[in-house]
Length: 107
Image 1 (cartoon, rainbow, N blue to C red):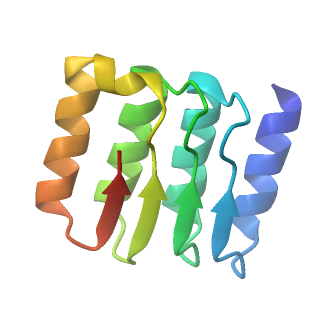
Image 2 (cartoon, rainbow, N blue to C red; image 1 turned 90 degrees about the vertical axis):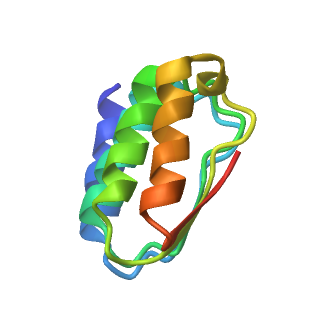
Image 3 (tube, rainbow, N blue to C red; image 1 turned 120 degrees about the horizontal axis):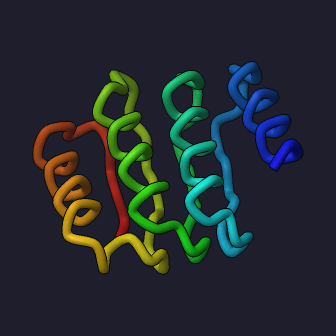
């Protein structure tokens, strides 16, 4: 877990990072929360791929909350994660897609 949060801290500080491809790495919910932290603090990101990581509702909902606060466009790949089986997470993604047109979500 410490390695994950060390990486998160570094990516939050790197304001030149535009593309983050972390697909198929078993990030799970803790990784989803880390991605949410990165999205809330790093405004240079334009593309984030976290597909196929076993992210459940406890990781996906923080991601959608972070995206709802962004004023900079970003494309996010969330497909292949477990969260869509949870009605709260699915509703959170659907609400985000309606409210924030600058965030493009692929499920």
